[in-house]
Length: 135
Image (cartoon, rainbow, N blue to C red):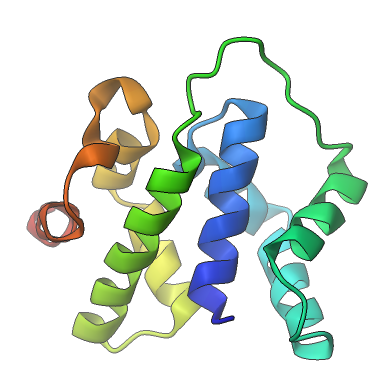
């Protein structure tokens, strides 16, 4: 699994479970060095899938859903969308996976996609990509 898919999958799933916008999850994961830990562990155990890495985060954060209101329940749709957008950014700007994830999650557009009530997660990858490029 490439780093882009792994990072986005973990961020979006955590966003869903904790009911927190994914752009804020990414910033928190960066600050806490979770992303570095996940990527370092992937080098040791490349055969492991997202469930393994989400389990690692679970062990570190006592992961459980905090809310009965699911404001971020469309994480699977967001994950698929964001993986494609990050790949487009990566290709255009000749970035590695993590640099492209950073560019995406620190964009204003990512805030809109993260907030389900905006319905931006329903837009096409090209629309999201174009929005980021226009920022």
